[in-house]
Length: 234
Ligand SMILES: N[C@@H](CCC(=O)N[C@@H](CS)C(=O)NCC(=O)O)C(=O)O
Figure (cartoon, rainbow, N blue to C red):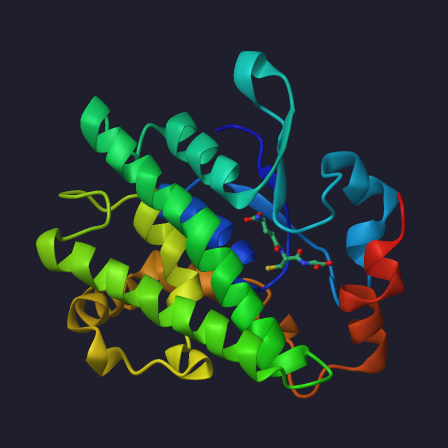
């Protein structure tokens, strides 16, 4: 059995993607909590793994050529882990690119747009109607794209469950927080309910569950995430 993969993480959608894929693949891993509200993403140790100071990041002690591999960006991590295990990424070349296409769609579309919606809707000190409407419209547009795809294919990559589904799922939890009613997206609803029932998905979403942020954001968290600490030159 290979050495456990070190997972630097926190219970957010981007963290859960990695927890779920590791649970699905049955790869051994250890969780190293990086409390992003407390500023632990700016520690020297974490910055040595990722200059972008964002979770998730991993170190695989048993990387290519038997050498340790540090990796950040959840999309790269999921592709790496699926390729390492030889599962959750289609082997057929065309299907593999379709899978990667939906992985990129999540990384470049769903993550950033849903994230900006959350910021302007929940955290911005002023309610800027234009920003809330713009990102809210993007959220709904992206749901429509997913709904269309899942109306023509069982899974995002096509016939197989893959990292494209896993990377997307955590961002689709709690749709009500984004003003989305799943009844409007029946194909997404079907797919979501199947994913939600998978034991590995449930175990992945339970990682660090006791640390999920509750209640109003504190001044300290606001400063770390959106203020001077966040934007200091490093
Ligand atoms: N594109 C990155 C995004 C990672 C990301 O935004 N992580 C957030 C948590 S979900 C974070 O670490 N935030 C800390 C901060 O903003 O300082 C990925 O997919 O890995």
